[in-house]
Image (cartoon, rainbow, N blue to C red; front, side, top):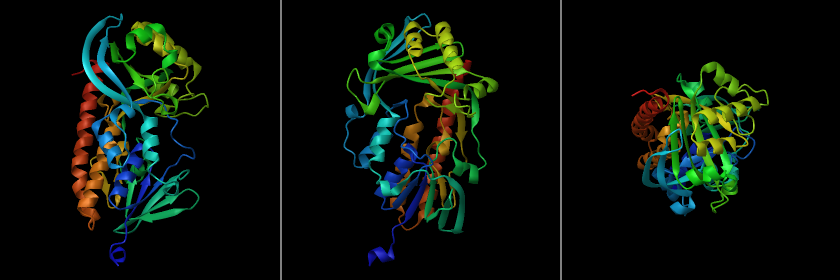
Length: 382
């Protein structure tokens, strides 16, 4: 009888990456039915790249019912070390923290959503509103699904945002080169200078950092991990467009995946590493077989709720990576959303209204902080 009086509400989540999985878990905890729609036809667990593990992500993992302690979520580093361009140590500080990988967190969160509710190869084409309390998602091929809430968790290039919002990200004027090197393949000089620490080095228009992360298949055993590096370089629009055109001939606007970087840009990286980087970082960059790249962009929307559609994670705001906050922001958005929907189980609009303001503030604060950090590091700004 109670189930008939209060039928379970249904959420449609567009985007099956971390933001979508975080949101799906928290809505399940709040008693909602959840379906996640991912445009890719393949699993997403092969993506490279490191994440600094933040408390919000750990809190969400625990609330999802996953029992993992900090040491099983990533690789611990002991110190933060800043190198001068000549390789001498400018600053060394004891600062323990844990670094993990996108892949490890994705695998954990994906295990909590049953396959029947995770729909691959689902390309959103439109959103319509049958009434004030429901929303319908239309997909390529003619499929459509209706729910009480649609969550745009489809990343920094969000199609949900393009459909219903006017906000577009701004290019920050620099890109992040990235790479992963197997721990057991680290050059000797890189191993001596970088291994086990969270390391940084700056030069004119250049800022690089690196740390150990879980290895293939989320392996945490010493010797089986990856060294993850991120190198920020000032790049104008014309050069960015050239870099983002991969070996497959596809002209991507803001990223080129691992394995698709053209040979000329690998050679360019080697040359620049020789000129700008201290020896340890120089060696690790030159030892990277398949570097990849992403453009740094800024975004923070003024509204995250439009009727029964909301934006979450990077779809709503894109903090620069210097803040180490992209994943933790998505987790915080999802945690707060779950709390709000549980606090107002019979008034979804009230829950969304209460949820929205703090999340907008969070996105704008991180945008401002990221711009300040990045401009100071790359352009020498205040």
